[in-house]
Image: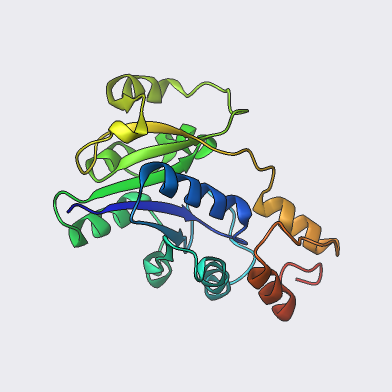
Length: 214
């Protein structure tokens, strides 16, 4: 039977409840076998992470421990070069059976930024794209994506068939939490309890991460 695998990439600087809730909601809605959280080594379109790759990886491991179907995929951290999603998808696709389904999870802002990604037109050759749409995300996609949406989008994510090639929107519970907000709170000495998993908070405290002195 074909596997159904979701992929959620990010710097996870730090991983927080918004990441985990998004992954779980998609896994439940589409009956995914697993969702792989994939920390970026050096994301081309983001600022350099504040803490080390190993620390970010360990926080993700702590965050997903015991939470099926969430798992960690550390392949991008093992490649000492910029993290291009299309390269990662090519490698993952080569490891899977021909009929296994890959789903790339993207927030609305990331999706709208696709035209600036490396070889972005090739992404759908390897996966389906699930756009995580919040009720307050009402901006329009750029012109470069309009034709793609017209040709490749389906109204029901459960109707996605085959291993790759289409786009669907998945509504998400709105959670007003971001890694930037968490870093700012920590730098000012404020609590981030209930914004990150307890195990992640314990790790941050034990290593003094994101404090003003850092």
